[in-house]
Length: 120
Image 1 (cartoon, helix red, strand yellow):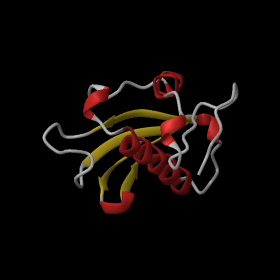
Image 2 (tube, one colour):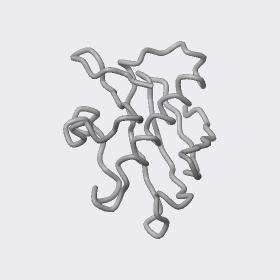
Image 3 (cartoon, one colour):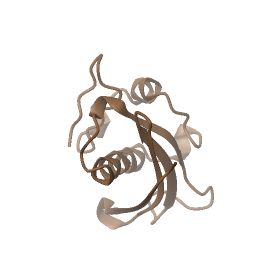
Image 4 (spheres, helix red, strand yellow):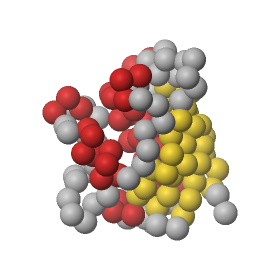
């Protein structure tokens, strides 16, 4: 579950070893805005959400996309729902010019389900 961060890669998260990463640098490298102040969002949960969005998009396009083309355009969480408590999130992502969006539910034991819809 690790996509390495290199000069050629735009995305990289290791959701099993999140405490060892420089998250501000990773988020800056991914070039997308945090939806809420960082102290209000669990890094572990956010990281798991991002990985699921990437994986869902990869499956949505049948694997015909490159890891280095991935961009998380936005991810948002309702302000009144803690991420760790079955929080609902919505997102937009892209692989090059292939855009997709959807919603997910963070459940117990980091089970995240994502429903996607390709965007024109």
